[in-house]
Image 1 (cartoon, helix red, strand yellow):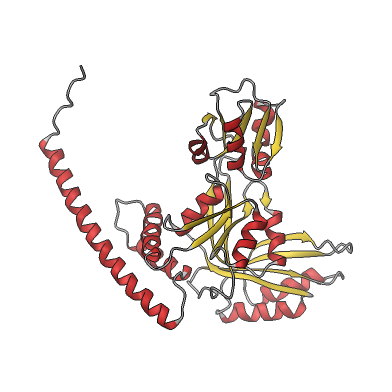
Image 2 (tube, one colour):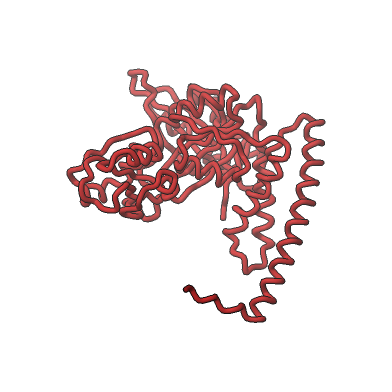
Length: 368
């Protein structure tokens, strides 16, 4: 017969009573906030403005981080308030967010990290479908991986920006820990490892050492690899612990990515007819894609306006233009917002020297 647990000490009971009281006060305050958010929503409807303003939410979170007296960690402030703001937005109309599915992908995790959990999930089979769903209006926003700290840019995502009207209104960065998942809690008998090509590349070293004879089988997403592993005991998957829980798999080997600090940057995209460009938040990024004529000094001339006006370039990537003429598109991230005069002038002069110029978006970034 199981022994009864000892009764809590009086001091512990007193602390629990205080916590219960504070929880009720917090709930009452959150409902007051929700009521005010509903009033704001009604005003926005009458004005014809959008419910979600990423720059406003960034400013709210920045202010709370700066005012945080502790002991609650500053890094905990953002996810708590994103959930609060997500729940308040959903009182009007929950945002429909497209991402690479099925359940358990890092793209889904990025969507929840940025928007909070009070959204309508729109899982898609591939990146093209995320762009299509967001362009067509089946989703209000799309979440797309654009860069990984180990493997560099996600080429397909960059290419799709050239052929769709979507633009970027936000970004989020996610620590990516890959795990080897399987029905059996052992490495013996693994004949194939299924995952997205990016994940397989990010775990190349570990897979070469631990499973040198196993086939590396690319699939549409890591979660799809987990689903396949749940159906066949000879298949292992490289995926998140969330995907493992979703499909009832063991974590045979945790954290198998070659880079211990492996991170992926995701862009939040939407259609310009449904959402305006975010206003300046004080710490913004402007993304664009350009090309120049194939002549000596063309790339140098393209960069001169940035230097002359003191605009910092934080990313510079090239992709073949596929014209057969050895021409390239250049994907550039700049520090600043077009509402700032020096940024606006640099962009104007840059546009003048480019054969192709497309602004991909301006959005607040997390500087903490």
